[in-house]
Image (tube, rainbow over all chains, first blue to last red):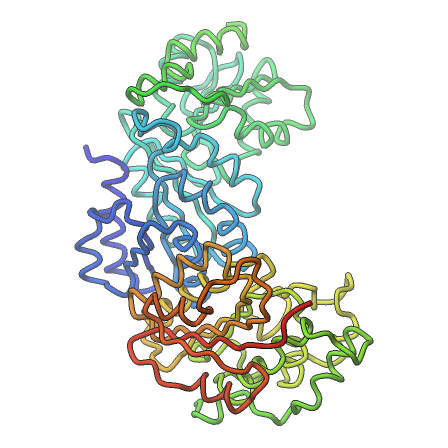
Length: 300
Length: 237
């Protein structure tokens, strides 16, 4: 199986051939994956060098002329470093783009904090009107990339990472499908954490929802399954900063007394190297780490 | 169909002599300091004689693009847009008020003819690079992209990313006019034109109040390179 990032390159190369409105903007990262596309479309595959402010602004400028830019680098350098460009050169100008990140929260674990971006989605949440896809499998990444490229002039963030579930689910932007039904509470698993959530809740009487698209947040879907539970208890399990979707969850359940447990990466900087798998465990996001906290919260 | 002259902003809606009275509608003051009018002559010459834009077709895909990056003190900009028929004169009196589309920094979604919302420094030139790449990718070979920046604004590092990249890829459709009123905290030795030239731009320095000199600088050929015009005006106090 290829990685999500490799799938991104094959799908985008194909989309650039098919849709003259698409353009790809790079800042060196992944440039080797797009050599063929750059040869085929020298005017629409643009590598600005190691210039991340320019990377995002060029996307804004391309969009102002009516093109649909796909803008790509590591999450740290795509969302955090040029954040004002994301805010002003896309949002304030009223234009769209597809931002596609690699690296996620700790893919480059051995690279340390500089290449980790657990807060990317939370930071984007301070802005208006972003769709956020967090695929859990390369097949989902492909479907969501195709959806994003064709999604009008909307502003879309696609968060790609190395961690994946064993099997893909059909993608359903705007809706959180039910993967398992139960009565003791609801667990929302985001993207690549679905397998760990299913393992952690094995044999428990809980409903598991799945989100490969977290924005828009499926408030109606959450309300409906929480209403079918014995208690209005919701656990969020996200591969990014703990609490990233807590505000959306509270808003969805604003009219009922409820409890929310928000699990994700911890805010404190983890000064460890190693592998992404070790970081998943260190943040308590593997099945064993999740099980204890979910059981205690739902009292199952 | 557009033609070389027909697509230009024509002078029929107003003249240069109308600009100061139009500005006074915004400020209620006939006497503007150099800062408030530093961009006036540059904007006028561009809109009157250079840009292929028309209030009749503000969204024409083949139009030239003018991006006001220096969004501070946009009264001269609004006055020129009014003189050229993009915005009605009645809007000017409301400048900066809650119900007015004319803010102290322009918003492209509120004002016809305004290509970018600006105010935060260092965004217009990088956006102009993307715009020039976009028109080039769509084969709009006659379309030129202009961006107006301030000399102090060039301190922002985002501009340097854009300046280096634009020259490296020979972005001929891109044109920058720097209104230089000596307001940079640490002015570059040798002047701004030498900085652009060192990166590979066509670059020239002119008197920013001299309409003939501005026109000549704006229309100078620059095959294979982006073009920078440094327009010097009175120092800001």
